[in-house]
Image (tube, rainbow, N blue to C red):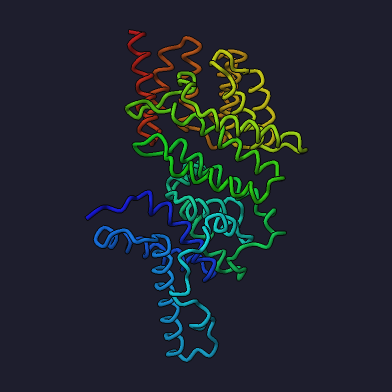
Length: 413
């Protein structure tokens, strides 16, 4: 028996869910049916071999399961003599009506999940689960909230869609703009989890990063004049260009300052710079364009010493005024240290200890450790490196932080 690659099922899941939801207009029922189809694939494909069209196979099985459930529900209602039926067998296509060559519905599913019945945070959480395939714990870490809170949010999102009576279907062209901010944010978060995994043994998940870039390309092709869509694609390309240089031979984390820039993807950098250069002059500047501009400044510097830190600090200042994301403040503080010195940055870092979602977060301790090391306080730096290592769920990040603490402890002894 040949095991089914987990990456294949993860890649196919949102495509299949999108196709099934588009036909049946019931997200919760479609999600359950797709999960059953994926379990069937994991059992049958190793025994019977990979089908010629895996995606079509999964759509067929999920549709058949869902159709069986619909017919069973109709039969139950008839037995109970309910006079009005919400659906008839004819309302749902037979399994054979599902074409295995249907288009990839992943982008449609992403837009559909940003449902008008949902708040933006709930829509983003649901979409990360359905489209990105992220676990509830991973989504919770992205939002800096407890896992139980996120589980309730996702459950309430599904209930809200059902209770609203608004069809779970593709929006009309005029409705897309109302959902676009949430769609862009979802792609951003999916990419972030792929580029820097929040938990587990691997530093990055290339499948997630690649999928986010692919969907961003599709969205940009559909909305080529939308500056923030262009800015997001530029940001993803400029950030992903460093992927190969971020990981050492043993899977260890290599920070930006120590990366071999010859391993950066020059073609991706050129494309990203071209996109952000095209987007910035169009009018109102948004956060993705600014982040892309920051990434471009990093990528265009031949060495760490050549980096234009004053420009990066100024761009983060603009970005901070647009967003309440505490991670932006943290990144701005790092840039501030490079321009104004570590003491000024440490003073700017202090308010984050007692307010906001970053209080107690491992990245706050990690940045403080780095700043303390820059300031020459090695003992305090060791302490915060160790605290940060104890709070992260990423194994490569934990090892890096412990290595930094050990290095400083040895030098101090």
